[in-house]
Image 1 (cartoon, rainbow, N blue to C red):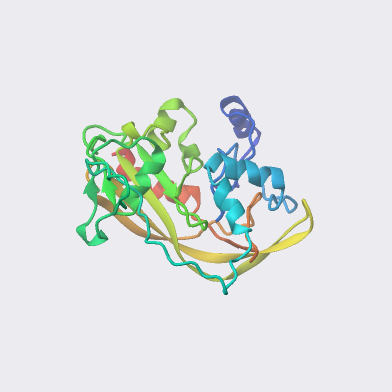
Image 2 (cartoon, rainbow, N blue to C red):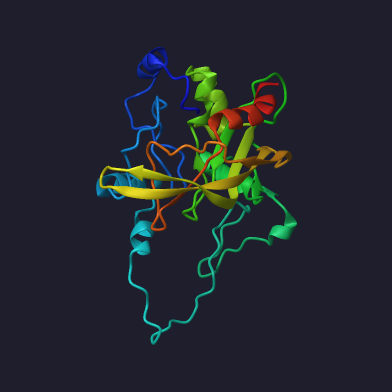
Length: 281
């Protein structure tokens, strides 16, 4: 969402409708806790980067505690290589359970997306639609009267599945009906999945300086993104659009990596504009 035009009336509406939580910006390292009210301005001074408690909380919520600690483990010595084990692909719905002692496999991607035998159990399952692996015939098609519920999944730099973005829709209002349309937590009601992935980065925009928890400077870079929208029930692609990172202000709160680089994001206003016709018509 844009940071301009936010006044005291809007702040009061946030307080009335949302729990008091930290408003995490859409940073390149996710996933994140649910966002709170939009910031009324960019403050130079707050960086949540290496606060151990916050990071552990984020990691624990995403189920990646093991992976996080693995990132800090010591490399194996080259003098003691282990034989490479055959890759074990995740078992997906195929109608049969792999026999004990066998390795499940996924058909080559040249086959295209396959129908799932089971409905999506959680929003993160819709990553399979974004990746062209599965579609879910049990889900409702984009048919009948609007609105057509959508889930926005935003790619991260962690090499994991995209995260479910629940921030972008707030310009549409804060009612339960709006939430069910733009950011449903129930995959059985979602007709569309929007997949947003960063495809390239560019020149430096500016340096972002912060004071808390310690003085630090991050480099904000230009970025380009690809937005794709699919019908969950069929895997049919309805939109494929290149978008620039038009939110080029220094984030109020950000997570960053060792390279101290952050990237301009697609603004929430631009995302709403790109999705509105598919959702509301």
